[in-house]
Image 1 (cartoon, rainbow, N blue to C red):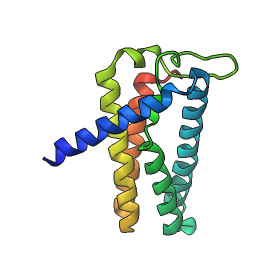
Image 2: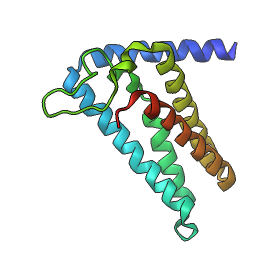
Image 3: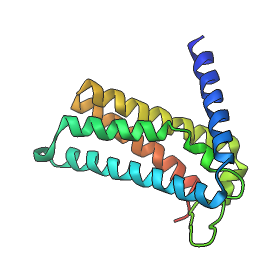
Image 4: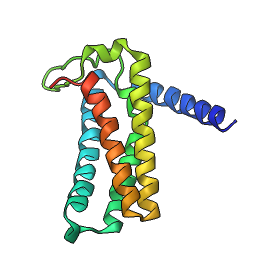
Amino acid sequence: MKKLLTGSLAAIALAVSVQAAAQVDPEDQIYYRKAGYAFMAWNVGKIKGMLENESTWNLEQVQAAANSIAATANSGMGALFSPGTEKSIGDTKTRVKPEMFQDAEGVNKVGMAFHKAATELKAAADAGDKTQITTAFSDLGASCKGCHDNYRMK
């Protein structure tokens, strides 16, 4: 029942975000998704720095960064990958591979892995256990790599 409810809620959220994205032209969709990923990368970098340098460890900052990553990852950004955004438009560049728009099953798989990893990182940060945070952070990185390896140009 929980899986059915979660799947239904995800489908509703996707439908709503697709409708919202349809109101944004393709160039702006590329711009917004790049901004979202840049924001997440900045927060990933903060956590990475604190994990690598014990003297900078600040749980509250890790929690804030993990919350930002999870919120952005689960905001419906997938809707910003609509037809017309598979190539650069004017000065707005994209590194997405056209294959992304032809592999709905594969994209769904990496997208769900990313959402799950971001949510689990937030939960680990909220729990405050550095070992759990380290594991969840590694899982988040693996989920990012799964998409980059398959759907992002170098």
